[in-house]
Image (cartoon, rainbow, N blue to C red; front, side, top):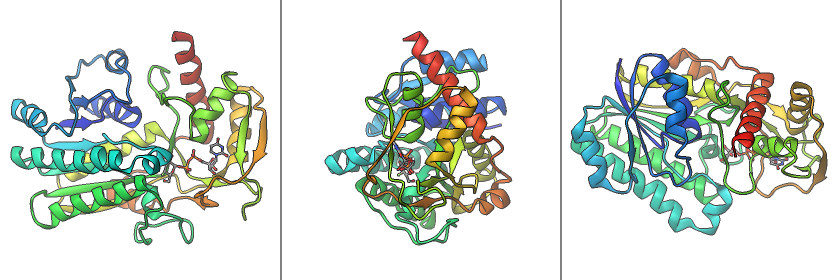
Length: 336
Ligand code: UFG
């Protein structure tokens, strides 16, 4: 059992990871500035887990405030989720992304060093592979940023790796997520995008809820079996369990380890749409639009390292992902 601080702990992946860590008997504290997370998340976490975990409303850029949290309780490890993640916004406002993501990570790492916390699990992304040359993508594939958001993830990975190399940190897991979707099966927590969703699953859910007229499929002329883009969709509870495994392995190891988190199976936009329709019984109106600039035809993981290093494989199916995403959408719309 360990005491772990989750930055961005009230966000989509952070909150699900808190549930998974608490279920495994760890002690969890959340740090969040609630810029992109709802204040309803902590009470809902309590409803799910029956545990009242401490919540620190702090910005990671406030090094002194983070230092005070570390001074008040001894943490064995930090899981660092707090970051901005919208590709379009990052291109429109690079300085904001450098400030929150890069300077924020620098501030957190400074506070960790001061407190002598040597272990970090970092929320990275398959975006670090840029436009992949071939799939499945293994961790040794070339790294390449195609936008500012991706650049910040690469810089953050490098900063953390350098601190391990120079002995300031002992252990780092750089977890490269493919496409997290789904929600906790209770329907109490899930992804709550601000404004018009840019990702496929939240958009599909809003069309199903009749909040949007129809889904635009961004291109059906890719070199894939049905012409639509292929991605590695991964249930957020599987992803959460991978974080538990990473933190537990980190407690007994040294060094920097980049690990892909995906199922290893790609599904096209059309396949996901049909899986969603079959699971929910709701017909999804759609139209074919132009390709979205910067989209790769196919992107799916080689998840072999996650299995050997972490003993983790994704268990949940596309049906689980669609059912849980829709339940969350349906229940959260009812609460509003
Ligand atoms: N798509 C549509 N219509 C939509 C939204 C998406 O057809 O309205 C398609 C996309 O073209 C793509 C697929 O659905 O083929 C998945 O798109 P998402 O936006 O859901 O996911 P991406 O793979 O493009 O992006 C995700 C993360 C990014 C990360 C990237 C690479 O959201 O943060 O993976 O790791 F940078």
